[in-house]
Length: 584
Ligand SMILES: Cc1cc2nc3c(=O)[nH]c(=O)nc-3n(C[C@H](O)[C@H](O)[C@H](O)COP(=O)(O)OP(=O)(O)OC[C@H]3O[C@@H](n4cnc5c(N)ncnc54)[C@H](O)[C@@H]3O)c2cc1C
Ligand code: SF4
Image (tube, protein in one colour):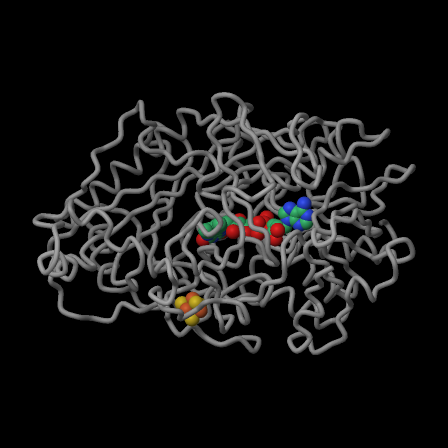
């Protein structure tokens, strides 16, 4: 059994408890068992242990701390594959993630006609080790979509319920940005943002010309030291994990301080199978497979918090069948697995001739763009509901494998020898890239369920996905394509790829590809149409909670993780209050 608590005793500085030194599964009853240690699970572990609860955390992957394990500052040429990605490292050899679209021995299936790809991390901290750190609050409108345009459903909570938690997350984790006072893009407790790079200033100029709002990015990267963590030194390699913890990852920022309390027992390489329910219908514990020995084990707790990621938490619930809950735990509504959404996505790149042969200049900075465009148009003027934001790319990043792929498309580009090298120098830094990230409306055709015929290598039944975009999403992505092409044209640039046709879905990324899957365990006021109440507590089982992207009622034109963190903190404080009052 691998136990992260003993893995980093110098970091914990306390007396971390390993599973083997803890009371045996039959005698130890923890206050709370959390499944998953990513954004949601990490925040739950932090808040609950700080609040005095004795917590056991089951994590399917091995221990991993960026401050110890990151490949920050390794040159690409130090790798035999020059940093090239592979099946199990799709974003490059030095990327901070263990996981990917395919995991050996852990399949998932798709219904006929479905295109959906499911990204999974398998490591302490989950996807927070290599995420983009774009940290956006949902705005007031994002919680009441149905009231605005009749589509989807409203959340049972509003922005004002979450605002105090967003504030606390900002101050605990750290985020840079600028106060803008925009109506549906609430400002936070920001550290100063870094200045825009040269190409970003040019993009900003084009945005200004076309009336597209363009403001400093909001990233969970420190520009000032806090809580013993250093400020960013602008190496631009956040995706590898930050060796000095200047950006947010769950293990270094949440799990390590939780371990320090001495109240967290961390069990890594523990693949949760199901939630065990007692005769009284309450959750009693979680059964899991010890991946290092293959043994079946159980932990017992008074409260269970699932935070294994939206679809995986749904999978655990659907696999938790018992006499009281024959359709899976907390599923009397039949809604577990339903209303699965992902962010819409499309991208366009362009060559900007006036940026070639540039004078040498410094474009170091934080990992990710220093500017972005929040949604800026009133949908009443458009033929689709809900918006998107724009993420920008370009500049002089350190060259690696696949650097400037497609050079033959540039004027006089390609060929061999001296001319090719000269072209690389000429065109290096002379292109920009725009990615749209937009809101999908939940629909009845996009969901996951248990595939009764397939199990993973642990014998756990797997998920089967169903997926369909609607015209709302296709038309939104068409608008992205047109906007990005207009921005590049305004910069005097050239787009090499033709505008994708309607038949090609206007270039929309496949479901799951933007890796923002949400829903499947949604919250709501009505137990007939939702799984959880407004506190992310199961309607059917009062000591069961979900603290990842599962409770989301809808997407927004924002990335979800800041909201997962704020919701998880709110849920955890509710659990502490309920425990203090003896209700659970
Ligand atoms: C490349 C990339 C870039 C991204 N960029 C952004 C961004 O800029 N902004 C943003 O807001 N979001 C971004 N995201 C999405 C973001 O990473 C997720 O929203 C967030 O991490 C979700 O948190 P989570 O706790 O739900 O799940 P995760 O972070 O995925 O954590 C789930 C954890 O549960 C564990 N687990 C799963 N199943 C089991 C099981 N059966 N038993 C035990 N443990 C289990 C996993 O190993 C994992 O550690 C990005 C994601 C990727 C991959
Ligand atoms: S850019 Fe900053 S936050 Fe990102 S890895 Fe480098 S030092 Fe860390």
